[in-house]
Image (cartoon, rainbow, N blue to C red; front, side, top):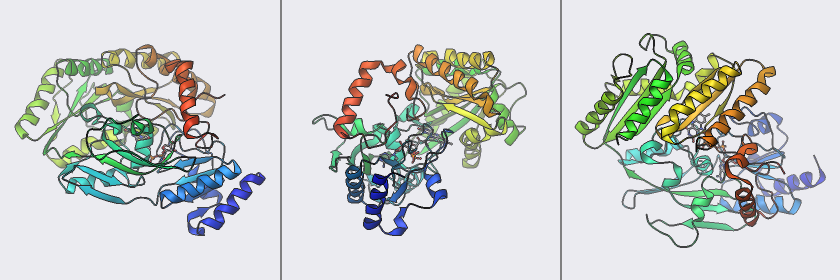
Length: 463
Ligand SMILES: Cc1cc2nc3c(=O)[nH]c(=O)nc-3n(C[C@H](O)[C@H](O)[C@H](O)COP(=O)(O)OP(=O)(O)OC[C@H]3O[C@@H](n4cnc5c(N)ncnc54)[C@H](O)[C@@H]3O)c2cc1C
């Protein structure tokens, strides 16, 4: 370790109790240096378990004095390497800032610390008859702070939108030491630049969020869930386009292709009609039970021509949960087919979903790799998982990923619909946005972080 880092660590040791500062413990530091991106381990030199905004400011003061990088770290479920300490430095872990500070049923807001697990917040607000819609499939694990940083989405984004739509205000500590409060408690508000919107999705590169004010909705009283099988993923993708073109917007429309089905069959065999090559998971919700049911029947009619077998509508909560488990654990269960995978999360306009699915398959065939495509097809956000067995296949995998990302942009979409650019996709940002937009974003970054100490090496292409 260099002399400035040693000096920074000594200063941290004088400012934080030993139980909240990790320095010599290699295993713990390595754990802070890994996430779900499959990009490797980049341990920080130290991790500080902060409990307040003022403590984050203290870390920035020390880091600035010694020119040491700082990286915000939450539950490390990220898939783009955003929390990896690629240049070492100090990890600021938000894990202890996990209190729900307020749930207000009159203003329809909740005020929370960033380390609150998303699923915990959802369960708490539901006890009050309220609803926090953003539902990343990692919700049992990931945190609101991580969701804000990545502007996370989930299956329900089709009807309810992503995290950005629910963040009314933030408390954020800037690398310069300022503690800013952005936004407002009112639903409307247009004063000044929308700093809240800029910070949401900034991937922990502009400031460290220490409090989040989110908007809530009344909880829909009824939900209907159905599973439909198709002979091929092309049929299922066309069915998605047809449902949406008819003006029916279910709350979720999740697609799973033939490779995904193979993984599902290994973990829960015998569920689907013979010949099924793809699945659609459909969910509708609302306050009128009959209408919710009528809507799911309508979806069934619209996709019926191509469906294989009956539309399976869940009878009761237990069956709903069972259907969702298929989708929720798919990412993990794919490892039963191939031990390694790179999981991309491109998004394309809805009309281009069938073409994107076909292109991903073609890339896999040309490079002799299994590509599993599944995801939030209703909003065009597809997870293309390029799978492989051995490290020596990695160059081919990288080639496949590059082709898939470029195809998404060529079809009018984006390289990332929800996981963020992070470390994983920074080489492709220019292909999507062009050099000028990147230069402007670098200038914005410099206004927040003049010394470039916060989460360096992320989002923008290597200099
Ligand atoms: C099985 C699985 C399913 C998933 N499904 C989805 C899905 O459906 N939708 C989706 O959007 N994502 C999904 N993800 C990805 C991941 O869960 C999300 O990106 C999530 O928002 C990350 O939250 P985290 O708390 O784990 O953050 P981390 O991974 O720890 O960090 C993510 C980024 O946020 C920054 N950060 C964290 N906290 C703060 C803070 N307080 N202030 C500033 N920056 C901060 C970090 O520096 C990093 O850049 C999935 C992941 C897995 C493993």
